[in-house]
Every structure is written in C-alpha cells, then in structure tokens.
Length: 482
Image (cartoon, rainbow, N blue to C red; front, side, top):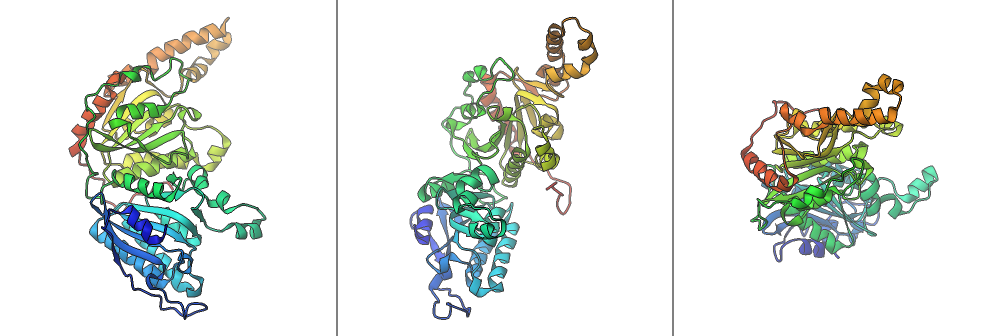
C-alpha cells in the first residue's frame, strides 16, 4: 500500500486529518535543487481508531526513498509533540532508507529530535512502531525506543549496518532477510513484538492492540462489557498439571481457560518462549499476564526470558494495567553461557520491574516455585498484593531431589540401599517443606484454592484492587540494572 493508503486503512473511515501536506525541503545539494515534492516523504496527521484519538505518521518510500531530511523530521517532531501534549497514542509507520545523505548533518539532527521525543513520550502515551519496509542505520533507534514494534514477513527489514557493509568489513555473507527480517527480530534479537503475514493483517493487529491500551498514563485501560460469567468455574484445570513433576504441560491452556472468551494477545510469541506474556481481559478489565511455560525449557528463567518479562511488566505498570503472574518455575537456567552473558544482571531487571510496579498484582503458584526464581516471579515478599496457590504447588529453596542430596549426603552414602532411602527422604522432604500449606501458615500464600476456582478468585481479587493507590519514594528515577 501507499503511505496514505496505510493510514486510511489503519484509522476509522474518514477520520484522518492530514497536517503539513504542503511542506517541502529547503536544502541544496546534489539531486535536490530541482526536486521539491510536497510532504517531503512523510504523511503526518491525526484521526481515530475505534473512536479514540491517535496521532500518526507514515513514511513514503516513493519520495527520496522515504529518507529523512530536515523538513521531514520537523513534521514528525510536530506530530510527536501533538501526541504528547494531547495525551493520545502515537503510531509511526516506517518505510525509509535512513538519513538523507544530501542533507548531511541536518538529517542527523532531525533523527536526534525524534529520539529525544520518543524518550519524553515513554511511559506517557503508548508509542507503536510499524515497520513496513526498510529501516536502516540510525532510523532503527526510534522503533527501538517505542513500546511495541510490528513487522511483516518478507518486506520489513531493520539493521544498523546492511549486508553489503557487513560483507565488506567482516567477510560474512548474509541476506537482508537473514540479517534483519521480521522472523529474525521476532525469534532471535527480541526487537519485534508482533509479526504479521501481510500489511493489512499487521495494521489490523495494531488496532487490536490499541483496544487493550489507555490513551495515556493518566487514564485506565478501556473496560468492556463482558458476556463471560465472572464466576465461571474452570474444572478442566483440575487435570491440567501432570502427576509427574517433571512432565510438561501448556500454560497457555490455563490462560485461555480463565480469561474472557479465551482471548489472549501474546507479546513476543516467538522469542524467549519459556516465558509467555500477553494482554487479556477478566470480567471486561484489561490485565497483563506473565507466566512460565513448562513446555519450553521446563519454564526456567534465562537471560532472554528475564528481559522479556521485565520489559512487559514495566510497560503494564506505565499504563495502569494490572498484572497476573502464573508461576511454575524450577529456577534460573544454569550454564557458563548464562553466567558469562549476565544472568545475574538480567534476572535483576525482572526483579526490579516487579518491585517498582504499583499496579494491582496477583500471583498464582501452579506447580514449582523454587529458589530465587520464585521470589522474582512476583512473590509476596517483593510486593504482590495477593498470592494464591493450587494444591499442586511446591514452594522450596530447590527441588526435593536436589535438597535431599545436599542435606542427607552422608546418610545416603552410608545407607545399605541408597535408592530406597533417597525415595523415602524425598517423600518426607516434600511433605514437610514444599507443600503450599506450609507457606500459607506463614502468610506467604494467601490461600490454597481449587484450580476450578482460579478465574473466580482472580476476578474478585482484581475487583478489590481496582482502587489501589501506591506512590514510590520521591526521586529523580531509579537505577535499573541495565
């Protein structure tokens, strides 16, 4: 689609009001003096999505390859300022080759102004980047600074340095699709939160995402009238968790069973899949869900999962979206690659995000809740408002097998039948220390509930917390362990 067709398809019919249509560049240089097209390669304006106001800009690849010059940048600056001052979401559709070389440092200065406003708008209004063509060099940093990045398979590309430069400098032979295609950024780099098969599907997804988000940080997310009974029981969850503790199951089945009409918009569905995050509704109220996924790496927390979770938690907190955390975590991923890669620092990011969050928070422990990973997954000790557990929950410093090997090492070495004795000690340890009732006695868990009542308990808890107000200590800002 053309730049205007994309905007008109995205917005409500006949709602788009274009601004700065007649702007033209005023630069002098090779190939520019006799070419001064109107709009200077970007369509800017405002309109509505589902009758809610939004600001939008859309780069036009047919004008100077969508490259950014001084006038082009000033148009984007103006629409960014309008979004911030009006408190409405900003949607940027990227389809350009980066800075306009002929305009030199003026083009670079224009990018700097965009980045500055991206940061000023962060946590104030939702910022959504829709990459529908090339985005190279400095141009990629604006999408990277926004809240959500959308890409299209086969046509969207993002990279700092292109394949030709890489081939010249390092000798690596890589295609544009391999280097910066949608699939790469959705599965490996953690840049693209959402990927679509074509442009229209992508723009439809943007509209759907906005239905979960408030217009700004001073508003609540849109609440809808739900036809899904808030007291509906979920008896199918009683058989979700396998009898054997090491057997996997699909956490998304649990999520879809408890949320309204089974609708779950997953965030980064192809990256760090041992943690699933996404937006849903409970009794019409928008919630953000963070859950370990036992089907992938047993649901452990690793570097990517910690970063993904931290980003999502902070996004929800910025825009007043309550958090529901579903726990089945055996610990942090062991290994030299994780330690050398900074699992300590990245795990601390998720911990920091939860500790900083002031929105309503509800934790449900489904099965394993071991060690530091249990604490990081929004435990009572780091400020969750309510913590509930299923009878299958296991709360402990580590798994029973590992604990017995350490605590009873000498006894096992001296036992005539260590296998039999080990089994006895594991059973005893599980009964005495890992049961959720021990944690409930101390108030670390607020109640042990029947899995069939999970939806009902979540709805009631969030209803109670709807008026929650919590202020952080006065400070300039915290120092996230980045």
